[in-house]
Image 1: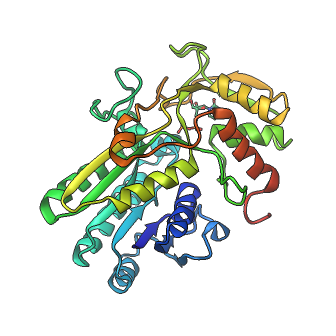
Image 2 (image 1 turned 180 degrees about the vertical axis):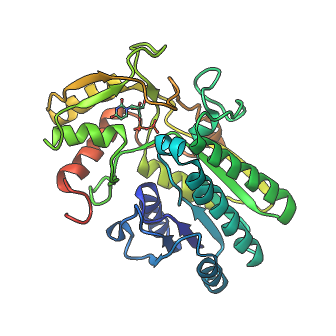
Image 3 (image 1 turned 90 degrees about the vertical axis):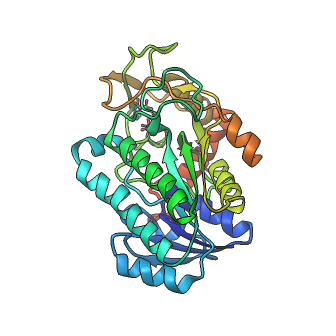
Length: 329
Ligand code: UDP
């Protein structure tokens, strides 16, 4: 297949681009390079540096590309930032997706795999989370992802789009060969922050909230390996039918607390990783982990990484080999 990938120079996008190339697909990456890295884009893919807000460039690219489908990763993704900058999030995530879909409709491209999020559930009534639970996001970020899901659903009815919303839990880990990994600036995510301590780049981590109604008082998340995300994206685009909306929770099904994550990182790195208590972070639900039965049954997806230590180990190998990320490697 010939696939247009937005945000393909980012963390999840770049691993998926590699997976698509490995599977024999032709890939064009479209990325504004604000948080993406040129070095992260597989050599077999073509990279166009452009913003989805540049409708003319998107139009021209889609008109000439002969694409069979789109994978849409490009988005702003900091929950906390979305609270103070909602308009930026709605424009960047929702408005730009609507523009992209308009151009797809104009050029008769009727397949999209969308990076949705478990943040669309807000604080779920119970865990594990199934796809039929109410979607009631508690942050502007989560609301932008849910709004896009509605646009996709309505498009499947109106103009025959085939759409798959992959509701990721926490993307984690790095390529098994340590050549691709996570490189955000500023780094907000737990695993890279923990590993920065092990690398001596920071003195300790802060645990955002120890009084949550969870077994050890810290937030519980489902850390799904980024290479497993790549394989589910391939399965989704390869099985997509027109005029159909599908949604899947993509996680391992295992909940890991912040304390458990820190303990796993201590085991993997041999560093004592000091952790100090800090207030809760706004927009953090206590406990999120997936029931992945639907994606396993319908797409035949099986995550390779189920043990958090193995996932952290791949991230550790990447950060050790690239202590300053891509550019300074
Ligand atoms: N977290 C933390 N300290 C940090 C970064 C994150 O305690 O320095 C917690 C955060 O509150 C959340 C979990 O770790 O409960 C995972 O956060 P992350 O930002 O990695 O992903 P999110 O779940 O927000 O998508």
